[in-house]
Amino acid sequence: MPATTRTTLRRGLAAAAALPLLIGALASCGYGSDAKNDEKKVAAEGKKLSADTVRLGYFPNLTHATALIGVQDGLIQKELGGTTLKPQTFNAGPSEIEALNGGSLDIGFIGPSPSINAYVKSKGKNLRIISGSASGGVKLVVNPDKIKTLDDIKGKRIATPQKGNTQDVALLNWIAEKGWKVDPESGKGDVSVVRTDNKVTPDAYKSGSIDGAWVPEPTASKLVSQGAKVLLDETTLWPEKKFVITNVIVSQKFLTEHPDVVEAVLRGTVKTNEWINANPDKAKASANAALKAETGKALDAKVIDPAWPSIAITDDPLAATLKTQSEWAVKAQLIKQPELAGIYDLTLLNKVLKAAGKPEVSDAGLGVK
Image (cartoon, rainbow, N blue to C red; front, side):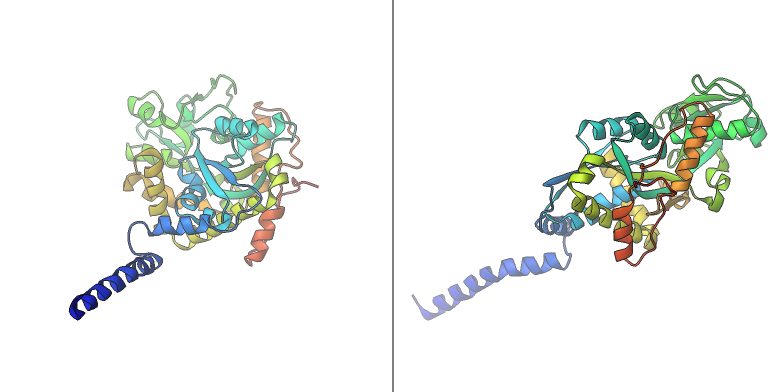
């Protein structure tokens, strides 16, 4: 073989050998559309914890932004290392609780009312609340042609997402404080409380079958985009303008058997919440991208722009406000006086917060003893 041919061949082989190294370097620098997937893959190849997998449930909803962003951006998986995160989405609290009770779900993001109902029905044996996630994001929006003031609500048809859900309880309590009467089962009375799925509420408003709604975001802003007006933001009814809208719950069995996995998930949620609060615009875009991936459609700017700032992302479960919400449900005769002692176990959350240099949070006297 001539010398020139041998030289060319050696150069070609050297270039071929260097190519994988170059590709690896580019990937490590974050170039290319698969960079985020590569990061998730690296995280998944880390040390496995006490469980092979952890199944995480949440709603494709802005009030579940911690889960939307933490799952999509790999922030929770990164903390789990070789333990695989298996996300599942749900449309309503009862189906998520059913999955938790049935053993097909380990940890979930869910509202306070389903948490209370499930805990009470199981006599305190099926779940624990282990963290907060979101506060606020609930509004009373109305047809401005029919309702000008809060007193005008009397005699009108106001939607809530479901009988006994968090917003339904809040509306019934507000009605009672106005001195009006409503039957909690039928929703009939001085105000007609119309239990309507959030997916259907915008069409119901458009057709005129409801005059307004007491609903969470982004449903409230969807109605505003159709001409409705915000008459009341629920945060104004609460001390310090904070109340829990989303908790993180865990199966008691999973918590007992795999505390290291639960702690890793909480490290992921705390870091996700820190990133969301430090980067609100980027977080809004990330949450919307996750919604598009989950539902096939992103929210319009006219919906997400007003909805996003009304939701406060927090690690604090705001336990005292859950206690108040349970008292409202009792007053509305939707539930009997519940025994909520032990519904919270914030031990691992406070451990994570302390390690991160953040203040610990309170269980308002409702923690495990």
